[in-house]
Length: 332
Image (cartoon, rainbow, N blue to C red; front, side, top):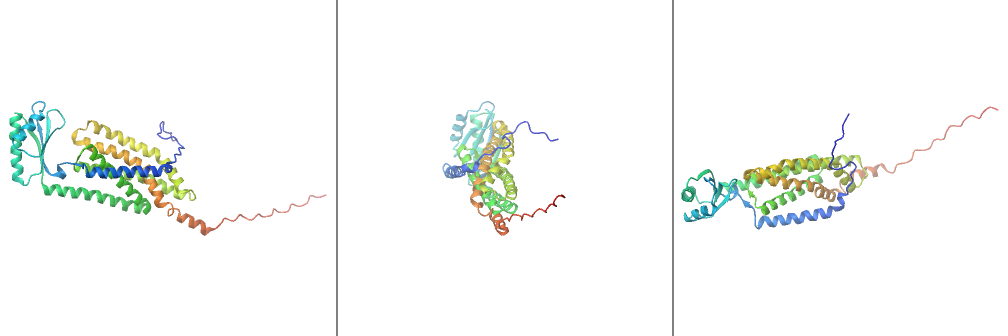
């Protein structure tokens, strides 16, 4: 005996006409993606050391750090292009230095910073030092862009082989829109963009792809089940049938990521915030973006085989009525 769930996000029999707002959804998504592209160029991403190059030093002071005093000490040692910020607790300081020309210049800059710290904050100690040269940062940037491009290509090939080309094209177009919005979110919030953020974007792409495949699976089943239903109505039906699963999965992942964003600290909170944003964007795009694009691309082609089969069979002829056998006359 199967028990019905005690709580459902969407009642059974829900029939929301999502396709009525398809043009509004596509226009809103396009506007947000264009705005994200503008933010990518100005003010641009807050590139981390992985992509910009330079030196990052994590320093711990004996007491609460005096950031103004540390900045003055670094300026007195003629340390150029430096940024000082809080990192975690009151006694943790993150010092970012610009890209140096060579290894000798890097070592000289590190010596200046350590001398300035000993003068300004006696007892301060350097916990971590990361150095990335110009050639390495450029290579990391190329590898990150290559990883995103290959992932989109593999998603296109996978969905094309599993479904039809209309499904693949609509999914990749939707994922590109999701990706641009995530980049715009990073540019707007000034979260440091490094290799961890590349991993976050790839994770968002994977989640969003899985969400769309679930809807597409139901669309494919309903294409075979309802051969005469208009594609627009069938997409509404498929989205409503998978709505409980879509919202349930999204809420579970959202609630799991929220504590990481709030209490995960500097090292993991950026990743979690991008995940939260990606969950919201990926879930909404599966309903309001991917399905309308599929409707525009496949309104004629996805129903072509069904229409051709119906024309080949021709009109259904009614079965001839057979005359009932004559009943013998009753004896007189």
